[in-house]
Length: 440
Image (cartoon, rainbow, N blue to C red; front, side, top):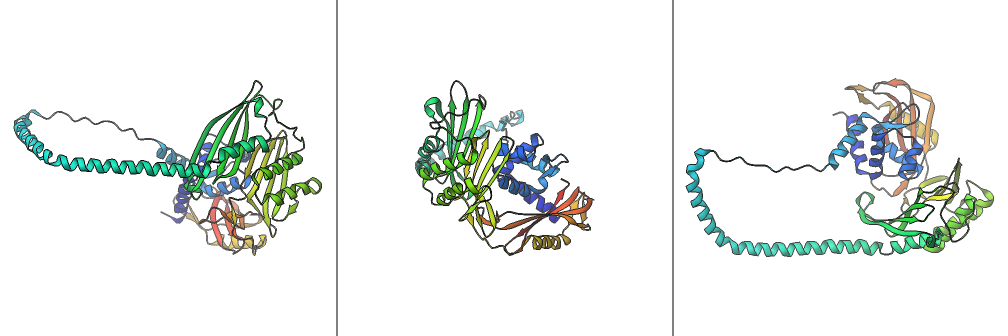
């Protein structure tokens, strides 16, 4: 197997291990979708989606209209994933009757049965002892399972209380106007997130005019994500609040974050509150301390991103993110405490990252239809270099500065390759990844 194929299969298995990337593959197996549609259905930030699409590599393609679809390797990955999820159907096996010629041996079998029966009498005592030992082990197993569950619940025992505080005090939803029901409460230890204990609470809010689903997620006992989805009714029947809500997004966001700071008393919220107060006069791009505001609006949608920023580097994954539709909050996430900063030193400029990427691409090759492709021409322009910090391969929650460089080729080569993507660490200049891409 060639190095290129090994890399593709490595990407395939890596993708199947991550729940977000499995969701993307399932989505694309059903239909082509745009980037914005994926953002809406997955409920993740734009930086997270870009990171996941990069890691999917050759498993996904982008057509001329800008919609994403599965490549042949992506379809193979979905087939593998579905095969692994299927529960094998076991069928009972029946043995046919013995031939007549063996009937003469029945007498021998009867004698053997008598002898075995006598031996079994001797073994009964030993079996009873083993049975007693098994019962003891089974009880110990049940105790361990119960202790583990109690450990999980002890870490999340306050999550339901925090969810109620979030609904009543932070969002200011008037639950007296609704029938509020807890539809689901799941607790699990996420091995793919470093063993984090995650609890997801799902509520329904129903009255005569509308019906909403409200999902609240906690990780290691700290609020992580809130999603509000209106299932019935219309924007003319929004949520009912205990207090009038501002119609201007920045003002509404400031009020919500001020209440969030009071409710949960996280120290990093001090600079967030000050930053939001400054935003009313100084607008988008304002910074305070290690926090930076990024505000965007399009049609009836608005996004407020408050991210960690140091030395001119924006660490978008370490952030608070709020999404509004028709000036009503639909999503709120807090990943500030989830991520650590490994380095804020940026020794590699954009131009240097492009040069490093071009040098790395000179010795790069890929295999298509059984043929190795190593002779190709890289255009000087256009070239794309996007800066965004990302985790290392060994630590999913520590961010390092990173350049994602896209080099364009003079034509489409075998395998449909027209671009080469190179990842470069911005603090060390080391090449993190390199892969061939199809036409976008």
